[in-house]
Image 1: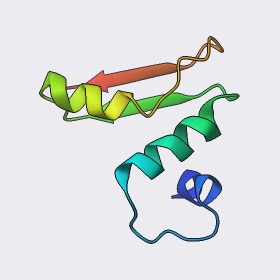
Image 2: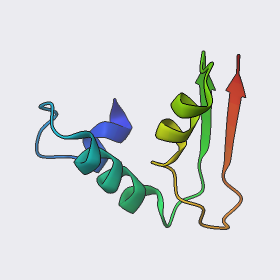
Image 3: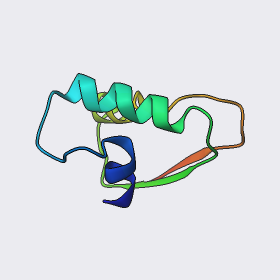
Length: 66
């Protein structure tokens, strides 16, 4: 929830997934991050989730456990 407040500090009201994805990508673009994802079982779910994380060559990693 802390990341959500940093990405969208003015409110946490539900909004369009495209807006959230764009804001998250902008927020993470200059940062190094570690994301751990559990229970993703389909390629389409993986693709729709990972599109929010930029490839910024800062050593960031995404780990998946299924």
